[in-house]
Length: 186
Image (cartoon, rainbow, N blue to C red; front, side):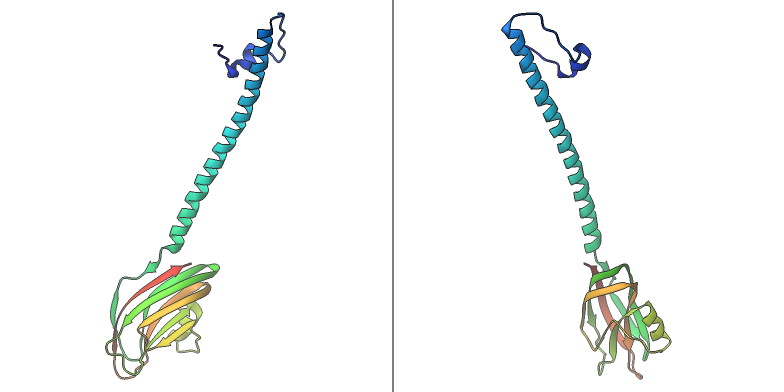
């Protein structure tokens, strides 16, 4: 059996090999050596490309996994239980949208045992409209519902700071609410 060292090619043999024999066996061994050398070069390139492909695939997979986990993880509030005095409001949650436009899903379950005549209003306000709401100026909520038990918002929000606000519209009696709010970025 003949053992050929392919890495020894450069320092044991130059680029030119002179054979001074008439034996067919030596010529066939040199031809076989050249074929193996060419095959080794092709396999080396293939292995190198596979390594790059594997590194890229793993890196992209990890980056996508982190990206998906961060986007799917909801912003949640612990269960909230509060009493809102007449004609007052309560900010249940604040969150920000950092992108120019973001698809958002907001879910809230609300229990209000003493909400008479749809006196509980739920508002989704951006920063500017929240400031207008506080000072009783004309405001335009992004979303508004009265006397609700479940709040669902699925839609796009622009880059801004947002507030989920409960407002007791009654002028005579307080309301007590229990709620839990989840915000999902899609």
